[in-house]
Length: 139
Image (cartoon, rainbow, N blue to C red; front, side, top):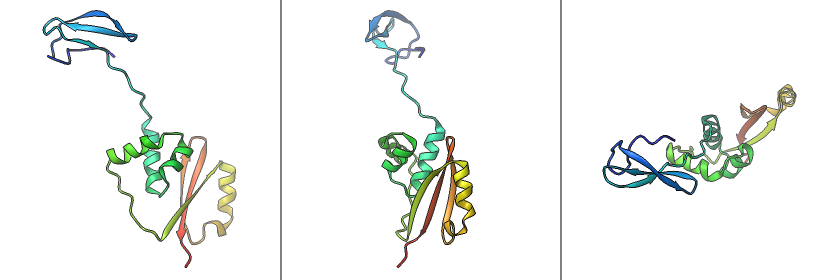
């Protein structure tokens, strides 16, 4: 990451002043403030953020989403808070999910009994497909 200005005073007059913890250290010539290059954090692709939020809205738990996508449940929790996602509360529905490849998915839909009386969403998940099915609990 390139340093544009001093984080303390905003001046662009800086000089290199050694290395600390394998990161370049700078000194501002205006205010004599020492600072280093910021760490560049790991960025998760927006595709996975959207997928995890979709799965959350479908009723999957944080840990289920973690097992499916391989993303920390804490990250998913933070995204839910960040984007202020509210899951609609309705105890009459219970989602189930399956991970299928294209051939298994076509076989699943050939049997009409699999989808009768239920809602189904199919979403791409890498080279496979996730089928989310929900149906009313039977009394």
